[in-house]
Length: 403
Image (cartoon, rainbow, N blue to C red; front, side):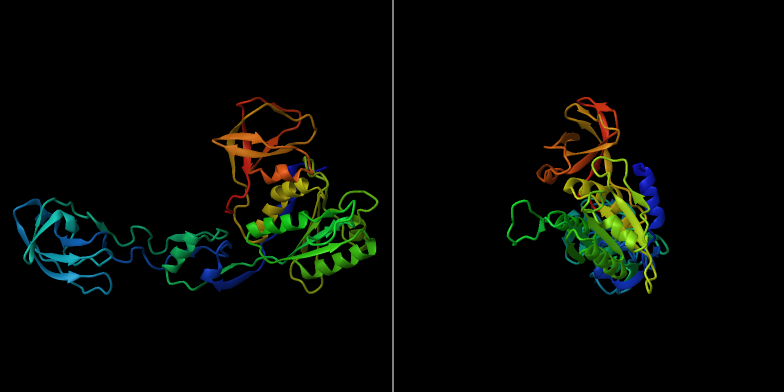
């Protein structure tokens, strides 16, 4: 069995970023930039007022008895190219260009209006209430690094540069294949001994959380010939194939024999982790495709599938989508009770996190879906180790934003 680190290193070495595409800026949310994006315009683009008030030379505000004539007005919008001679002022509004000669803006609340002039109740300093050109962003500054995730804030920044389209990495074509004669779809009758397919929808939801919202779903029974035919078609049409179940060594687990029939040798099979030991990875390069199709075989038990998705599939998918950082979000937390691991494999416990304290939730068994549904964090407990109440440990947060 491979360790977690060995398995993940192998996956990340084998998965390369997918092709690029140029799309509308508004469609890039959650995607990853193909290249460094540099500013072509400074922000702000010109010196402008932070307040509604009066643009003056700061020195003129020092004498509270002095009347300062206001000779013109500059609203927000087109620059009127006004000037502010010594001892005079210009009526100005938030965001409006600063007149030449003015070095400060005094708020309208701090003046007394006397006819066409003002008297300053407070003094201002040079630069006060003025936004300087380029103070936020300079021309040539990196706005987003290659592989950086595009957020709503990023879209606002790129829009400020007049960008309509940008180059991003494509989203992979993904299929989820659920195997097992016992599986039924929602709405179907449930015979004795059968179960509804929960892994398929769960994996679809996990993919949607990464921005992969169009996922093909397929189900096949425990039949070798059918499994061979389905795998052959999916590997030819998809970039990523997630298998749920059928990767163990039972008489009705047909994935490995089907791959052998197709001439595909698994590169990973079994990882030293609990839950999730029977994990399979293989690649297949099909005729007419520029990149190899990657196949991830997840265990059939739902908790095992969930944990191995987060540990191995998630970072691999982010790498395919061009993310520069595929690491999970972790933090240190105290444990609420004594936890121990008598296994020879690291155990990922599911639990909640509140006020910096991790609390294991419900059954810590690989079939326990309800306990999983209540969890928002995973705690890695090394083999043969124990934590006492109050001890600190690394916790991996679930349902956190990517990047």
